[in-house]
Amino acid sequence: MIASVAVYLGAAVAEIAGCFAFWAWLRLDRSPAWLIPGMASLAAFAFLLTRIDSSFAGRTYAAYGGVYIATSLLWLWLVEHKAPDRWDLTGAAICLGGAAIILWAPRAA
Image (cartoon, rainbow, N blue to C red; front, top):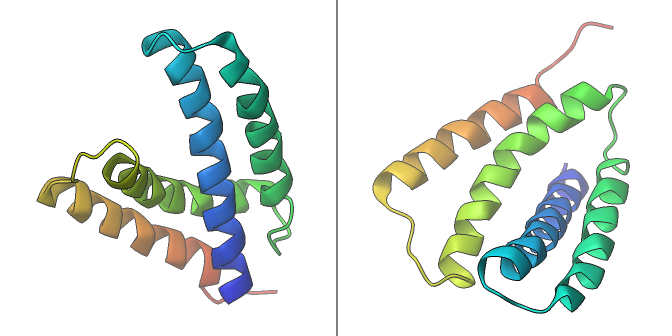
């Protein structure tokens, strides 16, 4: 369980960093050189999701969605220096609850 959380967090950071590189290039007028680490980061994201112990890709991606949302709000706070508001945090808590159910609910064989 701890390993899955770590992989999901790593995947989320890699995806957000990769997407932010494109954001920086197109919206913040940064150098196109930002795209090189951005693409590497997006490749790392895709690789990391394959490391989740799950029989079905769709279930892995669905559970990842909640982790991505919460991690995006951490990015907002730590990198962009904008604190999430109570509605951001409430939404993230709901999403993480849903992700936990999807990932760790007992399943019939």
